[in-house]
Length: 313
Image (cartoon, rainbow, N blue to C red; front, top):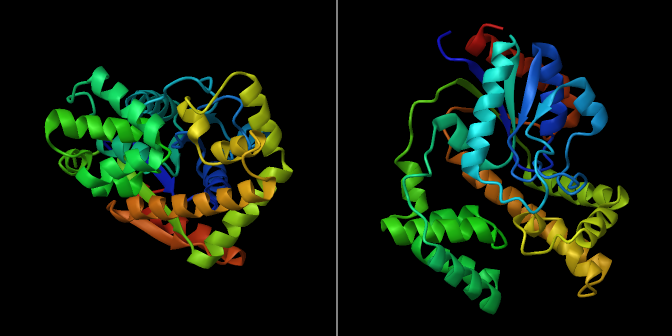
C-alpha cells in the first residue's frame, strides 16, 4: 500500500465513538489521534468527555491535553500536529486512528484543505468582535448566515472565533468559506477508511441527556469553577464551548442549575444535529446504525469485514 492507512471513526456527540474506537484499537494494534477541537485543552476533562486515564492507559491517545485553555488552537495547527502523529504511529508499525466529531478538523486533515492562502485583516476582526460584544453572538452568527448560510449551519453561534474567520475569508476573498472548502476536494495523503456512527434521533437525544446528567454527577460544575478561578473567561474560545458557557452562567448567578442543565441538553442536541449535517456531506463513509447497544459485537464484526476489504486486515 503506497499511502499509509488511516482509520477514521466519526459521528455526533454521545453516539459511542470512544467505546468502539478502543475496541478497534486493541484489535488492530492502533493508536488514537483525537479529532476533537476541545480535547486539546488541559483541565477540561468532564465537559469534553475525554477518554478516562484508564482508557488512555489501554490505548495511546494523541492531541489530548496539549494546550492551556487560553491558547487559540487552530485547524491549521491541528493539521500539522495530526500529520506528525499519524506519521509517527505508522512508522512504528501501528494503525493510526482518527477519532472525533469536529467535522472541519477531520475533513481538512483527510483531504488536505489549505487555509493559509487567504490573508488576515486584524481591523476587521476587531470590528466583528466589537459587534459581537455590543449585539451578541447570535447577531454575529446572523451576519455569517447572510453571506455564507452553508458555513453558518455548521457553526454554533457561540463559536465566535470561527465565525469571525469565516466572515474574514468572505470579506478578503469575495468567496464564502463553504465555497473554498468545496473547491479543495483533493486526493487524500492517506488510504482512508471512514466509519460513521449514527443512531435513531430519539435514542441519541436520550443518550445526550444521560451524558449531561452524568457530567454533572462527575463534577462538571467544579471543573468550570476551577477554570473560572484560574482566570479563564468567555473571551477564551475554550470557555465558549458547550458545557462551559452554560455552567459559567449558573456560577455567575444568571440561571439556576436546573435551567443551565436544560440549556446544555438543548444546545448539545443542536450541536449533534450540526455534526450529522456536516458528515452527511462527506463522501466514502461507511455508516453504521448503533441504536441498539446489544448488537455491539455484531457491529464490530461488520466493521472487521470493512477493514479486511480496505486494508487487508
